Length: 581
Image (cartoon, rainbow, N blue to C red; front, side, top):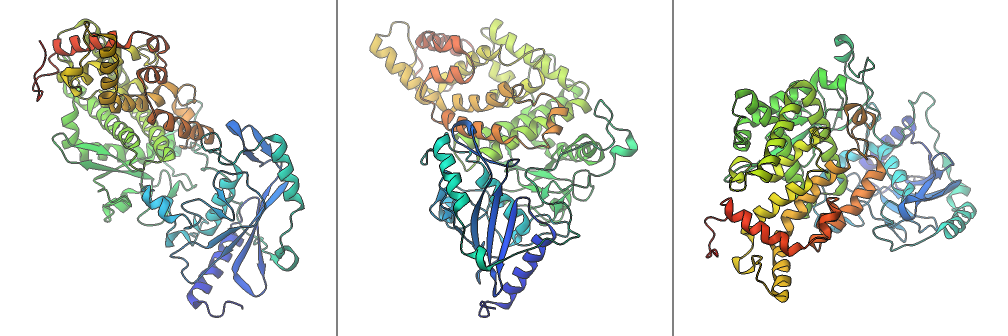
């Protein structure tokens, strides 16, 4: 062997990796080996008609019937570092191809510093645990090859970045060039043959979350629904083992942390683990945040009935000391039952809100992880609404009363009733039929503007007697001081307003997606994230909330009204500067 100087442990590990990919081959991927060098893998990534490359504007272009080639070199630092990846093909139609290098946090460490500076989640980075698959073929180099092909099969960031541009004609010319390109290793290397007894090949996407023994209404009989599904959901970050929906030992969960403060807050990094890991000492995520509780991924109805429901109940009990800080003070909702329902809405609403805060602050919250959080919390809330008969009605009643108070009770201090507007908004996910956000967003914005007044110095409060120049100054200063809350509101409302068009309005719709946002949804959200964070005016704010009429009204007049209402409600007491009479 040419790599006789290599560490014997590395050679042994590479042999195990080869055995993994032989037992669990990846669809549309072939591996070629030279007789004298098992530490160098030549990879052929095929794009047939039924699995083409997609790219261009809005992923409108497709190309098929060609192959791309990559070489992986396993060095002495493997598995602490990923194999060295070299892209061989004369192909440039991807925003994250840089010559013979690929920019991806897990596939290579060529851009390691870039991802570290962006605080990319540790579970999205290569680690030694990525090297080997488990006994079921989960993870390891089979998963690596799957990610590699999936990543190169779609130029998802074309619309946003476009440092490489192409059209249908140039793309077809490049395809023809790929068909002619034959790397030298094809003359001497041998193709690795899959083991004949190997299980089905790995294919793209999450496993389908099919409910076991479901009826037409999605609820199977009790005997069948208490079985765990056999397909893995992901990998436990602590145990490095498969997470299996419905399994009492390994049902997938995500982390919840508490940030101390006058009012403590709840947040998540969407780190995957099971309850057993948590009880065995998993108390810190790869982000360095503490894990104080775990909430279940709902996965599917059978897994929810078997395990998810009890896990959610346990989490609610563990978080109860924090959740009591979040209860509304709306008149008529003081009963024990109302407090129990409020705890559920507050828990989901708080995590929803802090996720959006992380996006606005650009705290390394990748768009895929954020959208996965939104989908998961929505799915969780829908299951809790099915389980707690009064939850949906409570959300509708409290929302109606709050909106009515904004419009009719002009002197009531609504911050005393609903202290956190951001936490409140999540209940619109349950009120679409009775109280849709889209037709009530203008009322929410009115209250948001009222609350934003106190962040602006009184010298810049909007006044009816202001000159044209002063009006412009007041509008600019109000936007500058209010933009964080406005962006936060847009991010919170974004998913709520789009859940219907995204096909995420029911439990069955969530189960059909297998708990993972579709690729097109992620692409659009990634692009929209940048647009929302770059918000530059009140007009853009209204358009993002689908309030087209308000975008063309007199902004200064709206701000004058907000100052009057904010003072009438007593929102500006205790400011560190004199308040105009």
